[in-house]
Image (tube, rainbow, N blue to C red; front, side):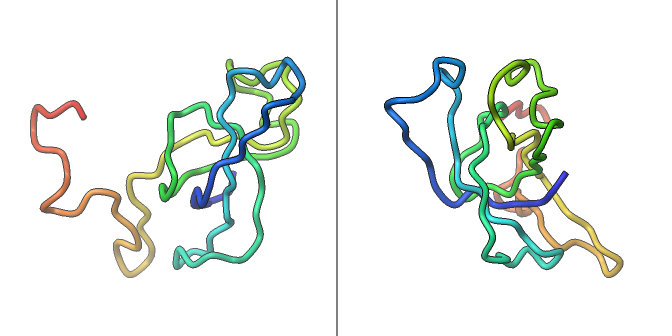
Length: 108
């Protein structure tokens, strides 16, 4: 798996029928400091992620191991939406800041 950020959407009105129903995103590889590396991949999204989100994605044959991508011609898939990343010196990334994070009992 790799760490990436969704930087845009890909729209293809004509495509293989096996790709119907899959949302496609441009994902930029991220360094551990969450800086863009300038390398990109088109990934199918099975998690309901959105532009700007930090995600985990995989490529190659592992991309076809999800229920939604099994038997489909995909080479990369968003498999998780990242909530936080911690390094040796503490938090590197937190999706929800103290003020914006979910509260107890909040399911969103």
